[in-house]
Amino acid sequence: AIVDIYDAVTSDRCYHKGKSPHETLKFLYQLGTQGHVESTLVQRFVQIVGVYPVGSCVGLNTGEAAVVIQTNRGASLKPRVVIVTDNGGFRRARPLVLDLATQSGHPDREIWSTIDPVTVGIDPQVYLDGKIG
Image (tube, rainbow, N blue to C red; front, side, top):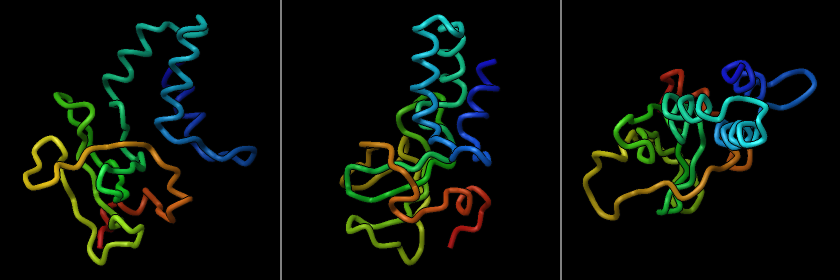
């Protein structure tokens, strides 16, 4: 049921636009606390898909926007991302793939927020399909 709800809420349908993965996880948590689904199973689901599921659009502490392309089991708050925009909101000439868990350099990039990809003009699917560049 949890996977079914996640899929239904994140998918675009003729009657609604899909919600972001992060919003959907928050919704599932609410359903768990209200007793509509088993809360321990929701927690296990989040452990599997990650706090920032693949396809999430995130804002970094540097002002850049990125798309999550892989989760890190040992570091759920530090997934592998492709950085799409610079700190001014302009599209990078060449997207940068970066593992937030193993990055080197200053400053360390961290996820500060989830963002609606439409507001920044990003189609996450392009980066998930390996069409980077």
